[in-house]
Image (cartoon, rainbow, N blue to C red; front, side, top):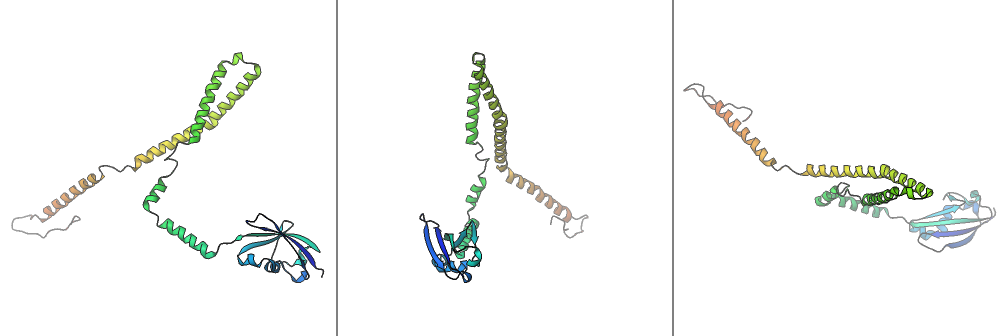
Length: 241
């Protein structure tokens, strides 16, 4: 088997300079891509960094034998060395910490986050800018339209084109944005009215329980009263006992 000369162009993540290395493989039939990685980039593999051999836009697999890769007697290979992969324990601790923080969050923070939405600040600054733009250009176009008879033909044509564009912007962008803003405002007002608790809720509850107690007491007195003089009956038990 003829030996193979490999020219490696090494690209490391975070490094601006490009490294180059050449080596001669005397036994390409018994050498794999994985063994070359372990031989040349053992330190990067120990740091759990990804090492890829790329030739012709294809990544060479670790189990591939050099003789079967079609490299010829001399080949140029790009080596890409990525960043170190995070350890599983560190990832698990970060995930557990984030879930614990989400589970132990204060009710005030959760309440404040739940209140955030388009209804709380439904006035979009882009809408204000767009409204000012349409209003300003509309006034200018109206002033120019009144003087169209005194303008040259090409200026009048340009004025008509600009007026058509302004009408398009108003109908297709301005009015839909206005109706959307109006709907957001109505939803915000309805939500604010629905969140207000009734002021007489506790009093109404007390007033409903008082007649029920009086009614039950009246039923007890009626059940315990003797039907005839000198005859006593045991107190009856009803649904209000």
